[in-house]
Image (cartoon, rainbow, N blue to C red; front, side, top):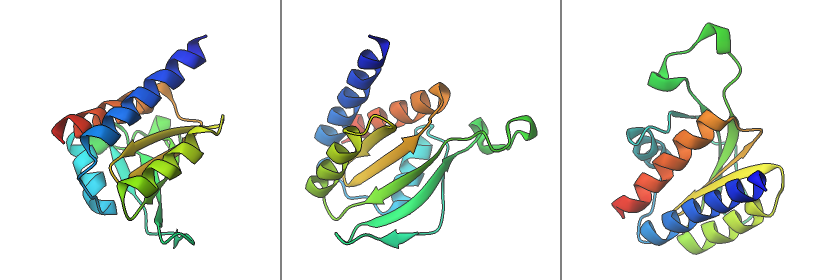
Amino acid sequence: MRLTAAATLLIAVAALAAAGCGEKHFSASGFIDAANEQGAELDLGERLATNPAGEEVYPITTAAPGGEPNPQLEGSGSKGTMIVADDAGSAGDEFDRCDRSADLTCFRAANVVLRFEGMDAADRARISGAVSALASDG
């Protein structure tokens, strides 16, 4: 039952993000900057690839709050992938594919989809809050 409530919350946050950010269009670094301004604490890696649909794929990791590494927690940040789609419709399709996976935690804001596997609760809460804040800015 708790898993269902968590999944419902993530879908609701994603729906808010989609509704609020429908007109926005983020670049990879623009999204990371905007999300981090809202407290997400994400680090962007170098572009990995462009998939067959023309969407850019980047590795992302969560940072310690305040961006300061904690040697006791080194390597414990959540790792994920960010897909930057051409438009919100394509991002919606990508989010739907991601959301159908039982192993992934997915977020969407405008044309950006974040996918994480094995995400811890603190990271999930921080990123959910940031995505929700971006949606309310829309």
